[in-house]
Amino acid sequence: MPDYSSLKTKFGEHCRFSEPAENFTTYRAGGCAEVLVKPADAEELLWLAGWCRANSAPLLVLGRGSNVLVSDKGLPGVTALTEKLSIIEVSGTAVTAQAGVLWDEVARLSAESGLAGFEKTSGIPGSVGGALRMNAGAFGQETFDRLVSIEAFNAAGETVKLLKKELSFGYRRAAGLDGLVLLSAVFKFERGDSAALIQDRSCVLAAREVKQPLDFPSAGSVFKRPPGDYASRLIDASGLKGRKIGGAEVSAKHAGFIINSGGATAAEIYALIGEVRAAVKEKTGVVLELEQILLGEF
Ligand SMILES: Cc1cc2nc3c(=O)[nH]c(=O)nc-3n(C[C@H](O)[C@H](O)[C@H](O)COP(=O)(O)OP(=O)(O)OC[C@H]3O[C@@H](n4cnc5c(N)ncnc54)[C@H](O)[C@@H]3O)c2cc1C
Image (cartoon, rainbow, N blue to C red; front, side):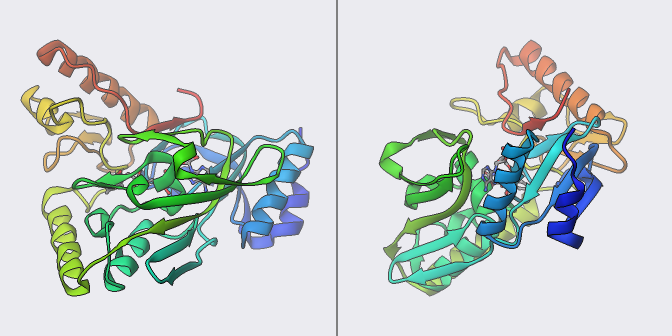
């Protein structure tokens, strides 16, 4: 059993024991991270990964926790949040962003700088690291569209640079990133008219307000879009809007979202995911694939 007290000595108030997932995931549900650390920069994150290796402690790196469901049994070992790796720079038609930068900052800054390509991804509430991992996207634009390269460190603690052409990616999928801690990425854009890009961004943000249940905790779309259709349409057509298990509820506003309507456990959310999947398969024959990531034991 690793002696985690040395992490408290190193990280002080940025290291917490038994931290509820409610405080670091957008579902605001699930058990506790055994140890939660917020490294101040890439050097501290590298140090932490080295410490975990040397002490045989599991390490999970999370951004904003906006695409994950944490088991009620919690997360053993160390969970590192990247939020302090928050440097973003524009240089000509390129943007370099550290893994913890809020994705929406990339969308906002590029639009305001007259750089076209991410304005339609405005409002995705994750980090750059999470967006790379998921190839997050919206309204026809995806993270990998503008990607040039990623800097990361591997399981041995060596810094590696990956070019986009070395990676295989697709809809909400990026292969070749397993086992890596993502540190930063470079994106390259076409020039565009900043006023038009800012206008596009505003339209997207307004559409999110209208269509998505942003007043409740959730982790966005639960399922991937099946070929030629929408998960939300199939769920609605299966009569599941408003279906509840405990505090977990299929959103009446957007059937693709499961919301935490108050005090939901991860088990309740997970049970509702299973029920939706089974009902959609029975009514439509379509097997929905989970987009959200289950962490811990289910
Ligand atoms: C209201 C709402 C709306 C949403 N809308 C969209 C949308 O339009 N389009 C879309 O694609 N998604 C959407 N999402 C889902 C989510 O925001 C995205 O998937 C986002 O990219 C996840 O980023 P994150 O930082 O929260 O990742 P997390 O949930 O923290 O992590 C996701 C995965 O990435 C890994 N990871 C994160 N950072 C790193 C790192 N630095 N190094 C290594 N691995 C890392 C984690 O280990 C985990 O496996 C929405 C979510 C919500 C709550």
